[in-house]
Amino acid sequence: MKLIDNIRNKIQESPRTRSILLYLLFVVISAVFWCFLTFNRDVKLDVKVPVKISMPSNVHLLSRVPDTLTVTVNDRGYRFFSFLFQQTPTLTLRFSDYNDGNGYFKVDQSHLRKALAGVLNKQANIVSVLPENINIKFTDLPGKKVPVKTDIVVEPREDYTLYGALIQSQDSVLVFSDAKTLNEINEVFTYHVEELELTDTLRRKVLIAPINGAAIEPRAIDIMVPIEKLKSQTRSVKIVVRNAPPGLKMLLFPSDVEVSYRSPASRANDEGGITAVVDYNSVDFNSTSNKVKVQVGEVPAAYQDVKFSHDSVEYIIEKH
Image 1: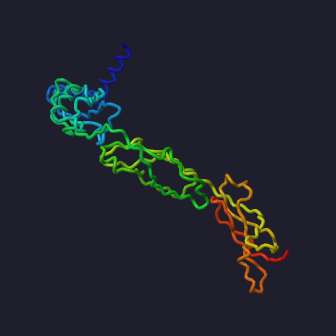
Image 2: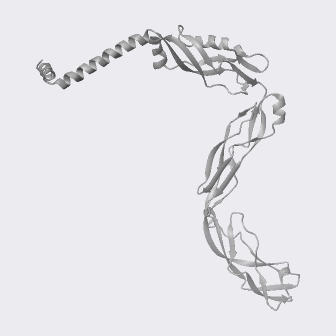
């Protein structure tokens, strides 16, 4: 009681405090009157109603199904609490109820309003529904297996390389449609993907481009493009003589050459793979020089910038 008396005394002593309290009192009274007037008159409200179609597993829809219906409802204000503070129920349409027997799932405006009235407030007046009706083509034919073609451009950074082929989670998909459309579809394509200046292996889920009047399963595939850092390497290789006639021996000075190249980091410890070649048929016997060109022979596809320390070596030909 003493605390309450102290507060009352401070309020009486402070005109500013009295003004604030009076202001808050009028705000509360105004809010009460506003709620009373609003909740006792008709109010329009747009409600988003989720849509779901219950259908057999062998049926595939070939047109886009709206995720929600926008329903304009006219009702007493106080009833809108159910729309504002509760989750809007989902409208479930049974496939068997609206299958027209000619390959279309059709729900006209009157049936759509009737179905909505069953999930919304019974007293609510439905003013409008968008879209006004549902008209979806479907098929119950088995799917056609077709290959997936990837539309992908991948370029690593200069000091990295593509090390291996593109890997797809699957190389084909199922396409569902009517018999005529299925007969015309022999492949599908992914959306275009372009990745430049890559410094790591690319892993991506890629959507398959849609086809009008058809359904595709799955709608996306996973891809992987291996990328590795390039490492500079240097080693010595023996020079191989080729196309020397029988009875002749070609001696080279030096007989080996140093080769420099760049390889993926995972192959840094690999031995061999690069060959240095001298072709007997490339010797110019009319020249006063006794040098012959050293050519690059076999090189693993993953190696880059292969260079020899010498572009030519001296030779002597001996007869057996």
